[in-house]
Amino acid sequence: MSPQQNSSKVLILGSAPNVVGVQAIDVSSYDEIIVINNAWQVLRSWTEHIFPYDFPRESQPKSYAKDQRAVDEQLFVRRQNEFGGFIYAGGTMALTALYWALGEHMPSEIHILGCDMIYPDAGKTHFYGEGTPDPLRDDFTLRDLYAKSARFMCLAARNGCSTYNLSSTASRLCFPRHSGRINDNPVHFLINHASVQNILDEENSLGYFITSGRYWETDLKPDLQALDKIDQQWTALSNTITITDIQI
Image 1 (cartoon, rainbow, N blue to C red):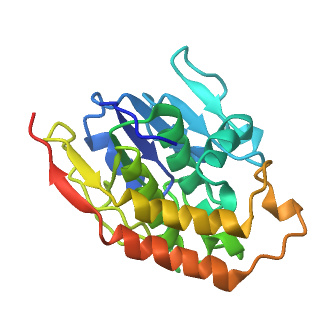
Image 2: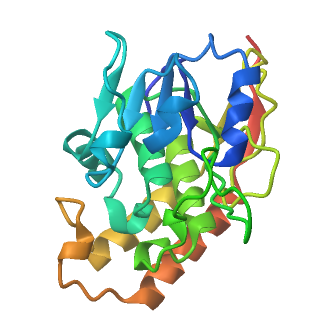
């Protein structure tokens, strides 16, 4: 993907207990509000509902308003493939929603809430009660969630998009925190484009690209050490991102 100029802002909502905090935020300045799986229940003003192929039909909205739409694998797989596919990006919906937002809307900022991927040993794991901690499942694409978020932040910065976490609690996301006052001066993340391309070239040299996105249905036997090395490079590169205020 090449950098685009766009001043829009996107909000992504997951199902962690703290997602209900969005109800205290003025969301009118967001151009798109993307809700993952059950998060459509938290806020009425969402615009896109993104969910995997196995999300139960009975858990989906009964109907969609004219300014709302469903985003399923028929749509998001091709977008995530534009950024290298699922094996390098990580096969869980929080990450998929991020790549969908970036590829589909090319915003200047993405804010995320309710996707920290931290699950307590007891009590509510999701805003609706107890649920399955999908990002923690035994899956070779999810060995380092922090690194997967670092990869996204680097690719977003390469495309002129800054990524923020609206959460104030512990997180497996590397994104800087944001107060939620989205009318503050915009901020741009500066990234070394050559370094990004070098890591992408390493990914391409491994050849772990599954067009369908369903890597678990293949007999692929990945080199985990090679994947871990790439994850480490994304994490290291994310630490070099320069945050610069843009005065308007």
